[in-house]
Image 1 (cartoon, one colour):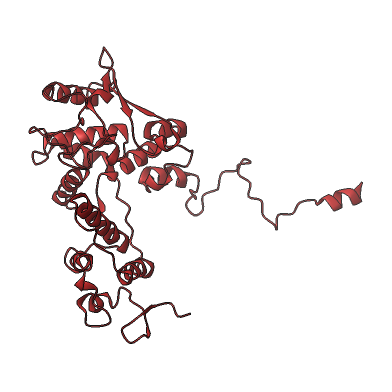
Image 2: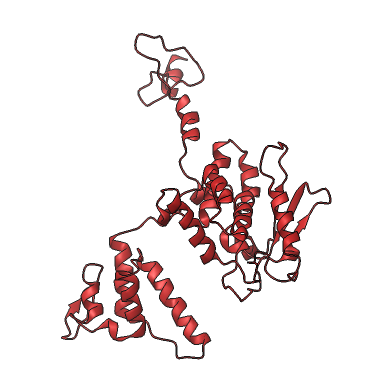
Length: 333
């Protein structure tokens, strides 16, 4: 059976990223653009330049859900369009991972006059708590989700030595495992104190109810993942970085990468980030110079005409290494 979809004349037609435009415009085959979602997909593909088919499909799904919530008919997604977007990703995979935020990136973000104060508080949470953005940020400006991080989920030690964050959402909850993170006060007074930042924010926003979302603008609206992402990307642009490579996950990825580079014990890294397994943080790790130097110190080769120091703890054993086999030993005995 031919891998395609039937065109107007009944012949098999394959729609992919190379001819999607002509099908959307109706120049070839059945016109996808005659549908509401098809027209929106055309905008996302060719105007907004959304890079992946999966992202476009996600946007289309959100629009369809929005229509339902407004008591409108849910717009249909043309099968031809779904196939085209799936083939788009298969033909040209795109790296959607976020670049890690460095300490310098975070410091400049917190010191920038262009960054709203609530976004700075969010950055402190994301960096020092190694949170996923959706664990502490709202999804809608004026609608609190049932499991959003609330003011009452944030508690301070009496001596302000640490903050306890109690999460009611996230991957651990899929196995009914509540998550508690601790953000501590640094021992060195010359370092930024995240506990003090959060304490000051709580005092400044004491007019808000304890059962409402924790992160809010001065007017009471909630700080959303989209707003925070846009702020991070604007700051990346200001630093001369590719803004498309940065987002809320950059803090989590950057924090994990920095801990690994500093040689933090693996068990401590897992507890810090709330990962469920020993390798749970692998998608967030990024190559870094400090790790490379540690690894390559073991690979160092002396300059020419210098003797290689002898060692017995790293003898290379291969299939050609002259050793006595079990048969030879038996024969000798």
